[in-house]
Image 1 (cartoon, chains in turn blue, green):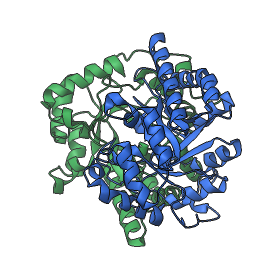
Image 2: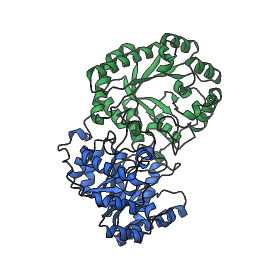
Image 3: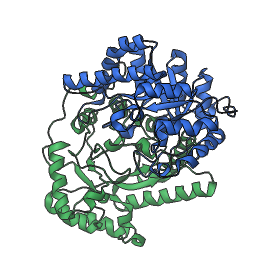
Image 4: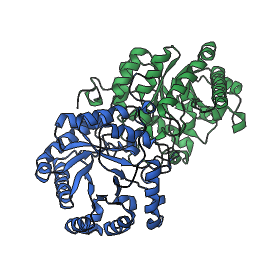
Length: 293
Length: 293
């Protein structure tokens, strides 16, 4: 033990308390039953002014508004948009599938520009029969192919490592280390990492990798929620901050020690919370954020 | 990419085909509905002669036989016993809880000796509110406290890293790297690692850590099953070899390249397979082993 810089408990400074809601952002998917308009209407009077937008809410085929209308709504309400979620899904055995993924990512970049989002979050994908290291090469190649378009629209691309329980079918990148390697390979100011505590809290190298991302300028986003002991479902049983075992204050201390000044984005998939009256859930999120994040 | 020795696809030699059942072992828990006697009776005529024994089957309070009777049954039937499963669960906030865990582990070592098992598999434990690196110190201290007893009985202690989805409540060791660090710290010939593909298949450092364990003489056990894409349950939805996405032949090639000559132990928790007629399931396991492992 003790050879690696794993020790979150050795953190020099605990994170200072959160004074207000200036850095809180909520992902629309956290309120799956709500439209974008409902999210805006609910959070504006609560003093929250940042929403990360999932694509279903700006896809008319899925009951959403158009990206143009979404952009206008968010702008008129004075909301900032840390991220559009989500692009990615690069690995593919066949070239047409690869091209289709790239086209979809270019559309995501366009949509992000339209709603004035800072970045597109990339859930990078995985294919069950493709070795993970091969899939990661597809990811690096795919992101490289998007860089011209991302530059033209000035949209950042944030690789989000997903928990190893999603390695078979959703993400071949399951630690910050593998995301870092792609950042190092591409070495481009628009390519970085979205750190989600749900996926990475267990990683013995987390503090070390946060520090490196800070040095490299690749820490683009910080997503929060909690991990419930005895999690009941692989997808939709995330906890609200304070429900679980993640040492959020220590991780935030490490993140902020790098100079990170971005949002604290609440992203919670939860059948239990989605079944609640969302108008009661929103203030509960704010209270949990102020107390536990 | 490519800086770390991650690439299972770069393996020099594919694993040779499995010629017979000489190295197959089955965990009694794979047939949860069966007693130890039923496992023996079913596998003996099928040409399988190794069973790893779960403690419920040798606990009269849980409907099992006594360890003495189990030892006699296994010996009389000519079965070898790679492992008794499981000890561990070391981390605890209170000293009495810690002592209780040590006492239980000493009993497990005694039971292992009684049934002539080679090792006790350690599921090391975790406590939701204890930082993982602190918990790992409890694990190292706990194993250290067991060494005298393990020496007296000549029983190996195999640390089994568990998938990160169990980090909150079952295991603070989620990669081979952290198990290796404890092996290095204790530096004792009876302390090693049980590699279970279910828990570790996704780890980018897996091949590297297998090689190091081989060099250190700490690769004590090799457990097989498969990871089902779209896994439905965190605990009891493991796949039979061939059901999922794990590149079993490549991992076995890496394991055997170290000189490992132990058993290939089939350990599958699966509500679906436990609901089957177990007498039909046993030959299905053998066929899957010969084809996919």
